[in-house]
Length: 235
Image 1: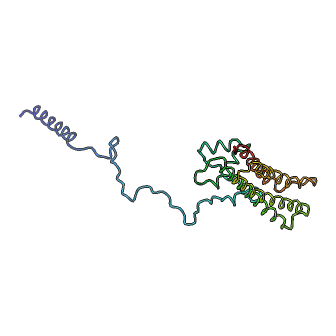
Image 2: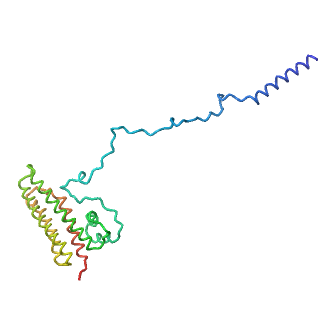
């Protein structure tokens, strides 16, 4: 064979070898541009939420007695989610409809929504307010730091609140007997009792009633009882 032809044959064999290697041999996975292998995760490698410390405690939600002082009110309840149009209509005729809905909440049972039933609930709420007022006033009177003049005013409040409780018991009897005239008189007295208590503190200059907020709520309840009473139609 001629040297020239032998050289051409040798070059052709080398070129063919390079082409075969580039087609049949896979490229190294570590070369730049090669797709990275999909990572595999064991069950132990998944991210877990942090565990709570044994000493961790959820915040304590205060109860009604913890969040409000008894001197301010025991009737500061959350406004109920009442859907019944009848209840909204009855409380809507009062000057303090929100207070009406609040105060009847503990007494709602059996779906009663007529004016007479709502009036009974409001009367009971007012009676409970008077009872609480007596308890708070007596507690204040027992405090050594309470001024003698304040004690005398608180004693007046205890006296009139007790009278209010008796009258409201009679009012419930008047509702049962449908004595509208007597009922109106008894409920009107409720307003006067609250005013008497509050006004007693005003007799001394620069003295503010420690029962001011409570008397404000009692006044609202008493007003609501009269408003509902006025809507009754008895023969």
